[in-house]
Amino acid sequence: MKKDKISSAVIRRLPRYYRHLDELHRKGTVRISSGALAKSMGLTASQIRQDLSCFGGFGQQGYGYNVERLRGEVADILGMNRAYTAVILGAGNLGRALIENFPFQANGFVLVAAFDVDPALVGARLGGVPIYHTRALESYLHEHRVNVGVLTVPGSVAVESARRLANGGVEGIWNFTNIEIPQQEIGKVRVESVHFADSLLTLSYMISEERL
Image 1 (cartoon, rainbow, N blue to C red):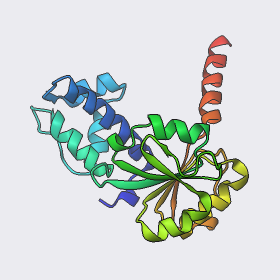
Image 2: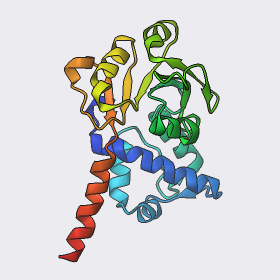
Image 3: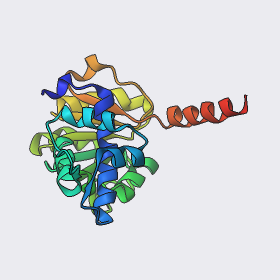
């Protein structure tokens, strides 16, 4: 089945499956039934079977799922074995935190460069990642194959930066700017936006509702 026919809800559950299976694998679990997997994840067995059936058959009736095999299959579906390359635009506080702490490699990405305008950062390395001046972005993208651009720039230059990444040939943008990137500005480039405020306000609603 083509990925574009699979619902976004299913796609967004896949990382949860991977995380859970990875934890089971590290604990030495060899196999698990759909019922046991569902219970530990707060889902239903039918939901898990339905989700996984979108990508083929991975279980065996009466046996369940081989944890290591299913973990590998989900990783492959998520593209974790393709060694995608990424660059970060904006090596300030958030960019630096991602560079030094986020496990890009463990998630199938190779962080190859960062870009900033701060003279104190340009020419330095953070976590082994070289930092170039932002004006060198186009030439870098021309010379290197980059799959994903990570946006941690100020909101005032978010759209312009996204446009530059798209024009440079990236396939996806991981957007932390809290600014919506208009699709018409970046063509077919995919955008995944992370809104910290949305997440915090969702939590605010949930705890407020409990007080009513």
